[in-house]
Length: 188
Image 1 (cartoon, rainbow, N blue to C red):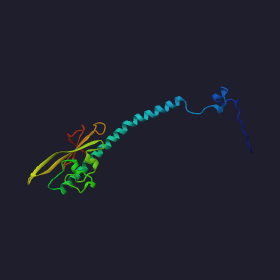
Image 2: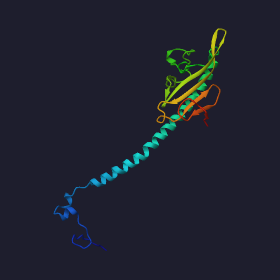
Image 3: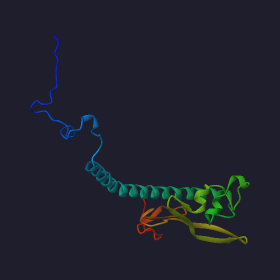
Image 4: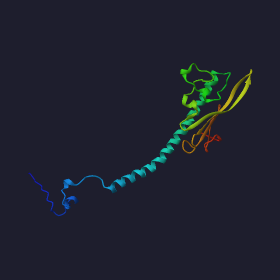
């Protein structure tokens, strides 16, 4: 059973391309998007970008804050190692004392090589790190550091992070919601 179909342009209910109605053949009609279609697509993309950009900034700030907390814990561990390696010195009062390059020679009290070089510079993941409030005791005409406070504050508060963090020697980590070093809230 063979059937043949024919397409008749003059049949009722069939549509003819606009180009064919104007006297042009259908093959001459250009395919593509109209200006209105392109504008609608661009508008949708802009709306999605406006929704996504603030979310990306919030995610970045949160990641920077987590990195700052982990870096302070790294500093605390490095301080414990420093104190056990150099008992006459006590704790280190600078990040540079905890840092140092292995290629520059063996570890020393001024370059213990217990933290990486990036953290030793004091700037990492949008936060500025520092060791402050060093308490020194003189024993046998030699100063020994018995306590310290490690701090991490956002390089640009509100952009790279919202909270500042403080960690005292042997203590728990606290936060400053204003992004400074007035740490009063416990970090969970």
